[in-house]
Amino acid sequence: MSRLLILFFLSIFTLQSIAQQPVEFRGVWIATVDNIDWPLKQHYNNPEAQKKEFIRQLDMHKKNGMNAVIVQVRPATDAFYPSPFEPWSQWLTGTQGKPPFPYYDPLEFMVNESHKRGFEFHAWLNPYRANFNITRSSIAPSHITKLHPQWFLEYGGKLYFDPGNKEGQEWVTKVVKDIVKRYDIDAVHMDDYFYPYRVAGKEFPDAKTFNLYGNGMKRDDWRRSNTDSIIVKLSKAIKEEKPWVKFGISPFGVWRNQDKDPMGSPTKGGVTNYDDLYADVLLWTKNGWIDYVAPQLYWELGHRLVAYETLIDWWSKHAYGRHMYIGHGVYRALEKTSVAWHNPTQLPKQLELLRQYPTVQGSVYFSSKSFNNNPNGWNDSLQNNYYKDPALIPPMDWLPVNPKRQATLGN
Image 1 (tube, one colour):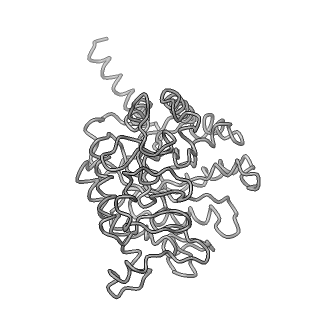
Image 2 (cartoon, helix red, strand yellow):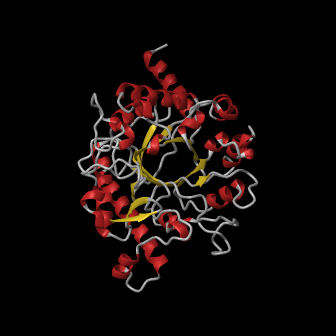
Image 3 (spheres, one colour):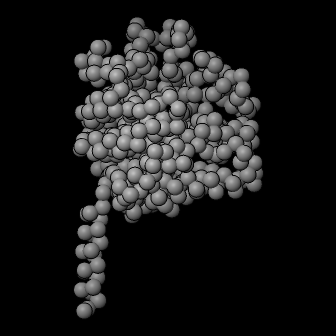
């Protein structure tokens, strides 16, 4: 057989293999705030142990069939990388502003190790949280809350950027653009913390800014416009720097209840994106400001107020051509009081239902450490059934391919 004929048959075999490979986003959140997932507190002064633990988690997720990690690299206006703008995170070394010793760049390390295993790396940032606990947090003299205290508001024992302050918005945009420019990340990811969750009996103290810049708007509308404006700025900055880098948002699981809005879901959520967090996620997808949405559907099937099946059906109808990945609350299997999540069939049934919706392209799991001890045998279920075959990352046809990595991720 000629060499040319052999190459022909090999190419046909390769194309058939790719065609048969599933296409599905399978991500895991790795939270660093308060050392939820990584690094471990006992490893504050041991970079080698930090690296080893991160690799252990990656290998566990690779074995489980995942193809993406969403890693929190800026949990509270601090950095898990050498930033020219913000100090080293206290959750890396125990003291904010203290670099790792022996020195290494955790973000560069994590991106490289993730890509080695065929994972996409999504850099997860909290846009406005600046001080996680005003009574206990380690805050460096160079922290922005010290340099520009007028940009921040205290609420619920934490400090937040005032979302109505345009200087604060420009600062956040500058920080994000720097990460995109210097690191080979696949996406910028933000969760549900724009305006903070309500504290009972306390109003978010932005009256001064509202009086200055409200321009006759109702305060709720003005707050939503502030959130819209930072999304637009970030979207533009990311794409100007690297047009192939994705921008994703992981909102709270209820956009709006139907009793407030006919477009809302038939749920009775006590908190909603639109009315409480001032995040009109549907506007962002409709306008193409973001590339994917990963709603946090952390409730079980059959929940009396916010059932998983009700919400996935609703979200599947509101993707507007953008990607939709469903956030699963696997951490709840570790909660003693979450009886429904102690049922081994809970996650499999959620995955089976998810795959019935063509506008839903995959899943994200909160959070990494939840898989350490094979909860309810779900690691086995993923490895031997649902994620038995490695999956390709769903392509986003509206974005160019990263010129550094033409090869498809997920193999």
